[in-house]
Length: 112
Length: 114
Image 1 (cartoon, chains in turn red, blue):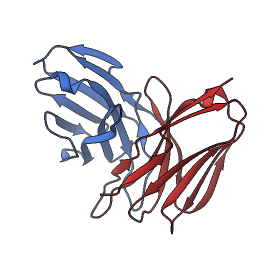
Image 2 (image 1 turned 90 degrees about the vertical axis):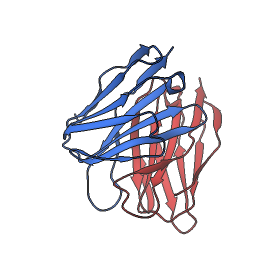
Image 3 (image 1 turned 60 degrees about the vertical axis):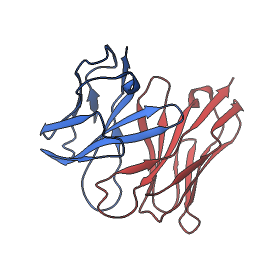
């Protein structure tokens, strides 16, 4: 099974700060997912990337396949970015049927 | 707008009751999943289904069963609820095919067992 480590577990920032969340995994993958969960439950997919970099608004995700590492950056952070950010990778080996292994999540709080 | 809908956002049940959690997706996805989410433990897979009437155990299937009679609907059943099943339950779906697929989640069902 793929092991996923996220850091930091908790992150507090002031509005406007640049934020980085890191994710490392143990087994080579086809793609890595970044997810966002706001208080109250629902999870949304932010990015799915297999190489290089993707950008959506103020969010940027990068991945280094050789180092088995990905980062999620938020530029000009805002209180509405406060959420849990979760990294996920496909299970290792066999027919995965889209099964993922999830990191523990990073709780981000952005203060005005 | 694509959607995964879970039948109940909040449920309170008593120990020993049978509990049904329903999930419906409108994207014609082959794969459907049930996860539970607990503080400090992250998301853990209970069961998943890759086709109608097909199911496989995930990492923590004990105390749960599932049913998938139609492609769009995946039900999680707690035969006899216990207090350690108090948790947030999340349903998700994805399409089949080679490589990783985007996962779509429902809003979650928060279950409290007294």
